[in-house]
Amino acid sequence: MTAHHHEHDHGHHHHDFPEGFFEQPPRLGRGLEGHGAVDDFNTGRPPGPIFVNRKGEGGFAGIQTFAKLPICLTPEDLVAGEMDVAICGVPWDATATGRSGTNHGPLAIRACDYKGGYGRAHFSLDTHVDALEVLRVCDYGDAPIKVGNTWNTFEGIRKFVGTIVDSGAIPIILGGDHATTWPSATAVADHYGYGKVGIVHFDAHADTGPDTPGSLASHGTPMRKLIESGAVPGRNFVQVGLRGYWPDQEILDWMDEREMRTHFMAEINRYGFATVLERAVDEALDQADHLYISLDIDVADPAYAPGTGTPEPGGLTSTDVLTAVRRLCAEVGVVGMDVVEVSPPYDDRGEITALLANRAVREALTGIAMRRKGITEPDYLHPHALGPGHSRALRDRETDQPAQ
Ligand SMILES: [Mn+2]
Picture (spheres, rainbow, N blue to C red):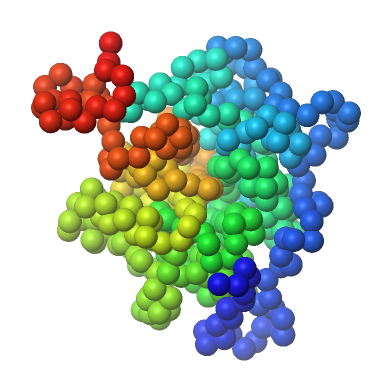
């Protein structure tokens, strides 16, 4: 497999675009200059994570970082701090077709939290794993956004996320509309190699459109752009949760031709989510060398996630989403993840959409920590979490310390 190849599909392209219009923005590899991860105001300080909250503060207090985690402002900070995970935002909504407002998503996902983090236990009741005890995690701030300039912004996102991957940390990216998965996942493929990354893509929508009239960069097209550029081949995609009235037969055929593995809500409703999740985990294990999760919050039913641009009734529950993310991170392992399409202006006043996104990130952290500890068995739950009446067989499966 060549490290990088372009796979142009002229068959479905419109002929009224100018020559060269379908060219990808230039690849990283000519350096990360202009990556936007800078610290202009503290020049000369020693690199490393900076704690901006007092120990033990609740999520409702103090300065809003994700889970009250320390911040890193530069790639040197990430390296000096030996970060395992860097959480960042992409406050961009200019490629959304439906309701906008996802540029406010990253801040809302950080701010909705009552829990806090740094200096507090992050003990998961499901697994008895404390992710923040196992992992070094920071908030890396937000990618540089150039309002009105999609290409410049996307190249900036790509370089910004690239600084995280190149530092050795796992990026967890808070969107932002879903078009940003194109530069984010490309940054991960830049590092691990084109064709070496697979994506498990949770979404009500396929996001494989050839274009949105007049523009190639849209939140309906990122998966096609990743496939056409060769960054993530179609056979490396596992999609979960599609439903509603888009795309059409022509696009479904295009997806089938590229061997995308798509699990519609129809399959989930017929066989149950647990069965389909098993299939998705198996396929993720079977696919590329490195897994990236792209979680469009609209995969959840609007009852659980109303604050999103293109809500589609009949989706997953919060529990489905959280379980799936944790299992993939523990059982398959991830090199990157994004949580996109949270649109706070349309959220419930209880901020339930932002909170689901926040918890999806926390479950990802738990799953990454489980894998680091060697807890990778299928659908692991700590025996204590299953109640006092559990069977002897289940007790015998214990791999961790018994509960107190
Ligand atoms: Mn969607």
